[in-house]
Length: 86
Image: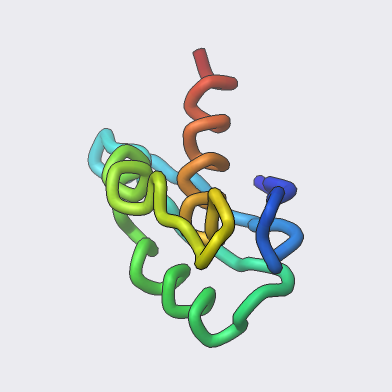
């Protein structure tokens, strides 16, 4: 899936959602643009985590004076994914 970010240095996030043992988990998170090293780190840290846990941990993180951040944008992407499923 691809999510176009808003209000951050990154322009989009691509990711996969897969079911493992009856739980939807996040895989293969890749940001386009932004702080490459930090965003690779986020992608690796959330790899294999349940969708709801990623949202809970990353939602609301701000970057400096901005009202959002690259981690927050991932939480928004996953929240949008969940909303589309319903």
